[in-house]
Image 1 (cartoon, one colour):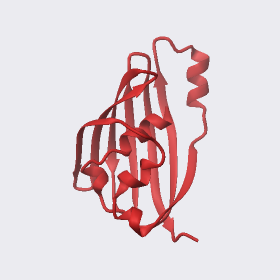
Image 2 (tube, rainbow, N blue to C red):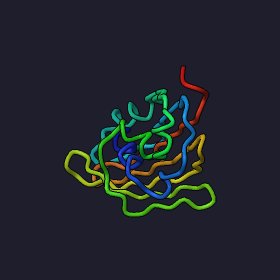
Image 3 (cartoon, one colour):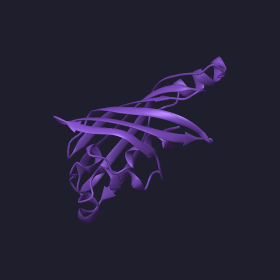
Image 4 (cartoon, rainbow, N blue to C red):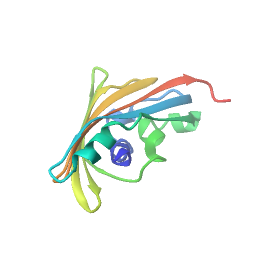
Length: 143
């Protein structure tokens, strides 16, 4: 499921064309809620109780010139973006992704700058609804 959230972010959108500062970036994602008509309560509880996922990535000056889309391209391959905007530092992105051959609509919203972002991702499909928070910030130089 986390890969699906990242799929949206790899698309070359207005919000993701935001200039990025090169350096070492720390990433995290956390599932906030999940539900679905066919999900057993034990599965829902297990998903909700997953700890945040964290990662670090060094972004070169050349990669930074391409914006957030390039930063996240390495994480996931594709999604079709139907709406994107960056207004007053706030991103609003909608995309349709394939999950197991089934379409999933996702909307990401939140602050986005050259050194950090925190996007709330709401995903909806016939089988499941999920809300996640996906964040990253520049934490220093690459060593």
